Length: 274
Image (cartoon, rainbow, N blue to C red; front, side, top):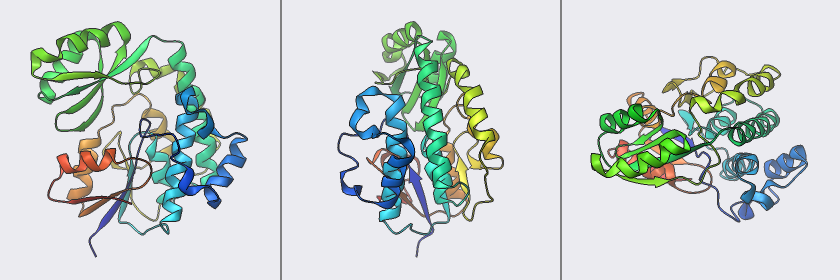
């Protein structure tokens, strides 16, 4: 059997009705009980509800698939919390509490800053990074060849949209509430760090890769807080898992965004939906 890694999606992969196949699943129902609310009914509220909804849906999908064995797990930003549960480092109940706190902290930070994000599709990474530096933006996500996301102040994001063609790329503004993975998320660090301090992490039974370092987590409590501001190094994370022997990547949860990135990053491997 091919050495398989499980991938969990981040914010942006949500869709209305994504939870319907998992209604009645024990993890989904337990998560709703812990939250005291149904975030699936209010996805239009943005970050505050989308993040816990995605966590519950991803882990319900993992549970429904029989909690498949893997040689590694990883998640894109928010997806790291599901990956830590699947890798045995974090209890489900604690993950729900942390993501609820994270969503609240990030939504608050977004509401107090005028920030946004723009995907720059095509063009060389170095040229996109140069454009970001000129405008005071952050390279927030290096997702795959030709797929980079910039984050920062709304006025600078608007200028990046206008100038993307000059570097042979096209720009697409993302429907998000703030400048995630940029210094504008600084107000979210303290409340998330406080929540992380209340949680116990275990040594994982499976390596869990951090997309902030493109390496297995060493100190999840510190790294999860740091990752609010650090870029998502998704391309490097996939390559690191491939170099560690992963031959097949399986996306667990709503959507197939990560499958698409893997096919661009490491076409010699197999990418499939869970």
